[in-house]
Image (tube, rainbow, N blue to C red; front, side):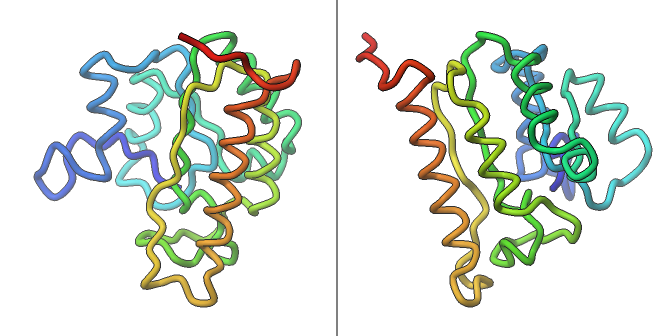
Length: 173
C-alpha cells in the first residue's frame, strides 16, 4: 500500500518506511526494473511520488490494476523486468483490508487476493530468484483471513520460483 521510500520515519533512517530508499542509495537493487504494485494510501506530499520515480521505481497503483486489469499489469511488469533476476517482496497490506485485515497499516482500496495471485502467476517463466511475504500481524487477524491470504501468496511464490514455462527448473550451481 505504501511506497516505503521515505528518507526518514520519525527521525530514523532505517525503518519499515524507508527500506527501498536505502536499497537504492546503497546500490543493491537494479533501479531500471524496480516496481511498486498496488500502492495507495496517504502521501506526505506531492513530492513522494516524484521522489519515488526519481529513485527509479515504476508505480502501478491499485486503481491502475482495477482499471487496466491483471493481464495489462503483468505485461507491463514483464516488459520492465525482462530477463533480470527478480525478487518479489509482498507486503500483505497491498491487499484491501477486506482480504487482509491483519496488518499493522491497513489501507482501504487495495487489490483483491485474486488480483494479487493472478499477478504473481503471471510472473511464471521470469528469472524469479526469491521472494517474501511481510507484515502479517496475527494479533489483528480475526478469523485468520490474512494468514490464509499470506499462505496462498507464499505458496504461489514458491510455485513460480520452482517452475517456469518449460517445467521444473534444473538445479543451479
